[in-house]
Length: 410
Image 1 (tube, one colour):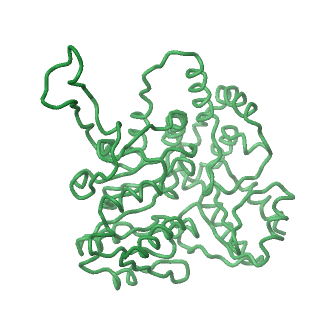
Image 2: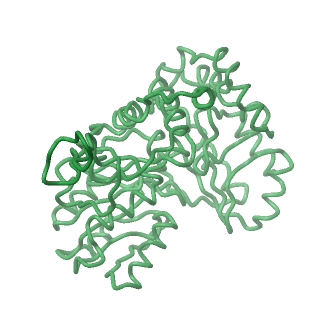
Image 3: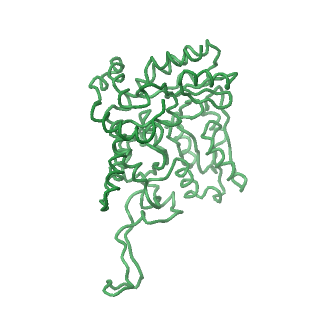
């Protein structure tokens, strides 16, 4: 189903007023389904389209849509109004991953955050090595291969049956390892690390851990302190139900500015900027003075944050908190479990580890063009790349969507 921009904007205001989260959505997992069925009204895409590629690009809900519309209305009417939403968004995201707001910096994307970590640790010139794996994000693979061409000692752990065995990681980590960089949940097949064991391994060798959490934040309960992660990053347009243009970088408080140094500089890192060069300026030996912004933002943020994306996130993160990530995960599990059970018998071998609790199920497709055509005819969207089919249900999907997918694949 296609919505043009105007229809989306105006439907949002009406639907947001009409739809309210059903109390049953907050019930125990055995009673979740009736409440979650009501959430279809919060996602315009669910009206006539079977959309199951949420790990790629999550459709907007009407609450985020309305917040964006209100922002555009405000901006169109003239005077600038101080916007407190970025700070609210930072607090909401920090609560989602059990971090402090002062440990969160805005970045344009997940990849931008990972680059901040690599440059701030100076891994290329540290004389140390970086350990990653072949289930990490493709852009990250490119990042480390390019650094390898410039002289980085790169060590890539290969998966076994869709899993990264920590014993294989242990074999390549040593006292010269500077960073272990992985996806907490792999975008390829939903493999999920035991993050605490990985952190313990890294720290025992004096190394640090970076985790790409873009396939986890909003879809899996996260506690970065309990996991003892040093750095992680994600964007808002996947399970956080936002749009492209805003992301988050978590940096453990005690590492800010000391271990992870600033390598880019801009106006979001300071406040109270004051000139001392014009008539009536206060005297100072310096031409200008300022105060560094406290927290991670004062080290790693550079320029403007996308205001319309922050508006969307303020509403969508509140929506996620209201439902509860544990409930979202419990709702999605029977959907992915059914896919894992039924599709291999229909000729689609499973690439996702059986034990994975991620909202991702990936299968081998012998004839991807033929399968894509089948799905298109019944207006069902999944991700098919090369000979892989990735299916990723979300909060608004239900067993009827799985029925339709299976029908399309019959």
